[in-house]
Image (cartoon, rainbow, N blue to C red; front, top):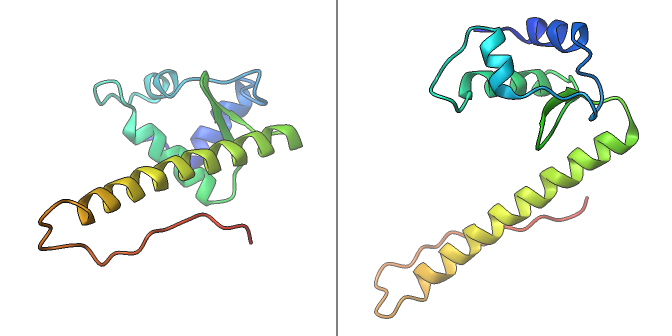
Length: 118
């Protein structure tokens, strides 16, 4: 399994800096000898760990890269917010459909969630 430091060294050495120079999780997994049937869960976990440790790794539909501009960080933050909102809408729909089923004898007491600006 690749470490966060190995990931950062690889991205830097191979100029995967900026949105114009991404690398796919598949190519990263191949480089680090990680294979899990094409979904690269282990590689994505290393990327998540790197972000959790404070490294700015962005993503786009072409892969991952080290963020190096205000535009890139804002693009990533907006993308994550949009994805979170879509997940919460899906959650809300499921909650409402369950609780509003005819003859519902066992409704959930879980509350709706929403994103709020802080």
